[in-house]
Amino acid sequence: MLTRALPLALATAFALPGIAFAQQAAAPAAATAQAGAPSQLVLSNSERVLKTLESRRAEFTRDRAALQRFITGEFDQMFDRDYAARQVLGRHARGASDADVKLFGDALADNLMRRYGSSLLDFNAQLRVRIKSETPLPRGLGVRVSSELLRSGGEPIPVDYLMRQSGGTWKVFDVMVEGVSFVRTFRDQFDPQLQRKSIPEVARELRSGQIQATAE
Image: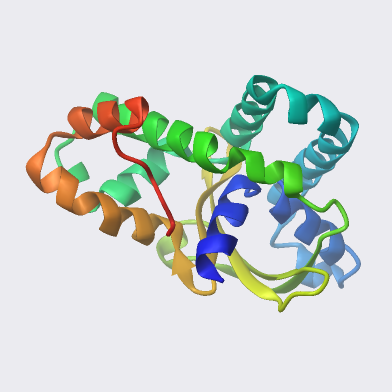
């Protein structure tokens, strides 16, 4: 279940929180007040994503380059690449330059989008998300939105989104499926590589496809 669900959650991270917040909108004001600006951001973004996927599905099926451009643009709006990259790098980020962290973050994001971006073509616009809770993260790092991904004919999949303010807006920096963090998953995957190679070397191999980010 995890190896199928994590790529889906990553590929749709910029859309699913908006669906979740939209369903939460009917809750009492006190329950939704904490969402504030993040709810408006992800809601408008998810509506645009879902509408575009439906209206351009045939085009995206024929033209994967157009799909990749669309995914990259939306991903950049909702995902905090550099902060997530530092979390994935873990101890290897200590003392690393901002340029090297950005190089790794860009390479990782591009690798993930190439591998899992086409999953969006299978994305069901009628997918439902049920909010379980929204809580502040420790030390004021942001918020955690806990939800369940409800699929027709399948068991609910717990999906959590960790969000922080970056550049004056709210962005996702980690996605957790069934309690498993994508940050921790890729930190464990790349740690052996980073023990032997520099951050730029690993980034180059990610960019060229010599190594792949995988949830499997």
